[in-house]
Image (tube, rainbow, N blue to C red):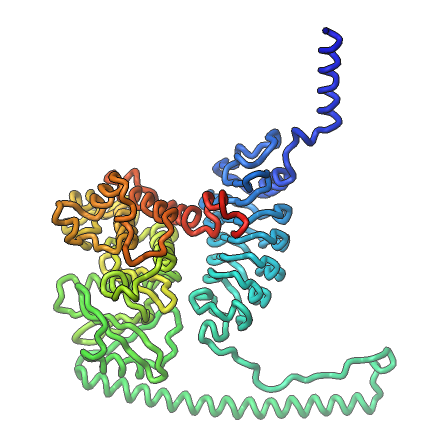
Length: 601
């Protein structure tokens, strides 16, 4: 018996020595450790990535495919990770989601990432990546989401992106890309919002024509052999003569062009001065009209803008608010803008005007309304914005007919974009900005239903303090956090509460003050909690939204419940809200989706 026991132990030791792979870390695990070695993990969030493990599937931020130990996703946003992304990322052949956004990663995006041919979602925004986009990115044929915004990327946009036929979200905004945007394949389907904040880009997508060089290039013949490369004395004089002639011709042409431009500019300047004087005289001979533009992207002479502003009347009104009226202004070339006229006789209008200028004049984000400029005239103050054709979310949710109601995918898109805009105000601006009036009528939509957070008339900058204390509670009833109503303390968490109410409004299709539950002494939060306790989820969802996926509905409602927690300390930050939305709601392949649909995703 003892001999048998010794033999068994000997065999076990021999198997361990001869076949160590049975207890060793998987190849994907080893690749992850190589990736970890190039990261600067200041918060030690990757402490459980250990070589002694036999599988990486339980590591922080890692999820594996069911039934095997191949890594399916890496989710490590908002982790304060530094360093670079190792080329070993290309060894994860079954990777479908890589989310490293909102960190401090540097260096280049390794070209080896294009070896991850099953990749569906790539989130690398808000880091410090440099250089360009990998030229072989077109190999990622399954890619649905590509977000490289808010980095230091430069160079041309690769035409291979046009081959990504499954791409439905593209965000390359706020980088340093230059040149013409290829107008091929799927690239032709994205508008300027995907490229905003890259001033040197041109092309149809950004509605900016590319300039061709003036003159013509001097092309010398290519030498076919060493003998041909040595010109004779006669041919040398001949070529020199050609060069001198060409340069002289270009010089004369340049002088003529500059002269014509000078004359044209003088003429335009005289016209502008004359028109400005006429408008000024019509308004008030003693008062001055002042027009200021932001971001340098309002391509019209001041005289034309002032003329259009003065011509606005009741037929151009598209909305109104607490501090004035909103007009649609159409330029001579059909360019369209929204103009908010803030009347001076409204109490608090001067503060609202200055607030909008202070905040929107210095920031720019794809999900914030874009302030183009402002104009002061004796009777009122005018703010000029990009015009958003679809109006407000409030209009689409509550004023449209049943046939025109928003489907579930559109609602999720609006939720995600609004969260990004609000997270930018809370976490990326210095000092932080508290909006104080988040509601559906302040979420504006462009023709692609991309949302813009608007109306910063009540917003506050948080400078060296955790809250803004006011003696007069501002905002809209139904959206206001209970602690703000009681104490007047406006914090980022009071904005989060308002966003939670907005989530419920989007899911239910009901305003926060809808009579159907106000009569019962409830607000939308209490009404929703009552229905969920009674397990009546089907009564919560807007009846016009028949395509709603119950899995994502539950995720959104759970998030709304956390955002509207009575204790502000228990509410998530907007960065956490955004992270949850991207991981649990908007992912092309949510975690629970893999169980039954992995073959189709």
